[in-house]
Length: 325
Image (cartoon, rainbow, N blue to C red; front, side, top):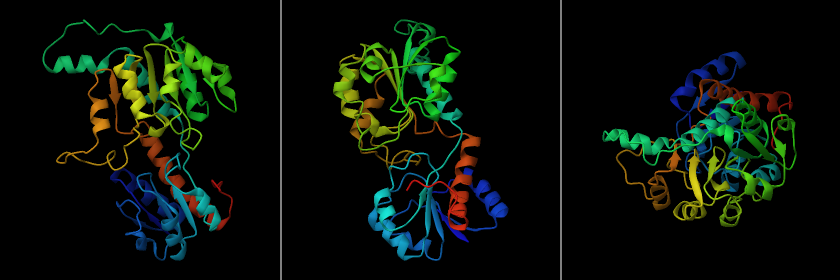
């Protein structure tokens, strides 16, 4: 069996080598993002695995199918970059990755604390030897209400992590689960109205696109802190900017950004980034933005690679691996 892996980072190579030896498969590795122009790299391959920087649309799926590819995997939990409907129509199975939620959940709590304690403003001051305290008055988690929108594996782990801080927690999910051990489930309006901090842990879909928009923000507390370690387009960037400017939003912790495609996970040090929304949002002292790295731990990367390779092997050899179709 031969598998092509796109978007391979240096930190993944040792894991790919280990999977190849253990599973007895032939691997072809490339750093390129999947496009129609480089689709020929998949010729003669049984499966293709990628990350999330490319747009796997109908035309690219058709090309893979014509080249003999029989299965796709994404080494990410999210799969909004793949046209699943068309993949199903042409009989091309697609699998996503599974990794423990701890890394993203820990990162989520970190962003909450950074926003509550004005980390960014304090860091800026220290660069110019300003050690004053004015404007750095923080709040303690134990005295606040945290709203968790989406209580799947990551949202539930966030709730468990926060339980040690003693804060009140509200949760919203169309399918309530074991997170009820740590939080109280409620409707979305109540969560918006009563939460001091709101963190979102949902897949991106037509239903969840821009779920945090101007109307949603207007229903929140004044000074609310918003956290996003899931998918950028869950939050309307224009609405976030307006909320910050109007001081309705007290802080933002964003590990993902609506317009990050082609920017994050790449080195643009000597380039001009033509993204005015990103530049404007980043300059606010109460906005912490990181480069979509909440997932990026040793354990998660190993699991992502393993899922990417094992998913293809399991589907093609036994049909036993759970697919998205």
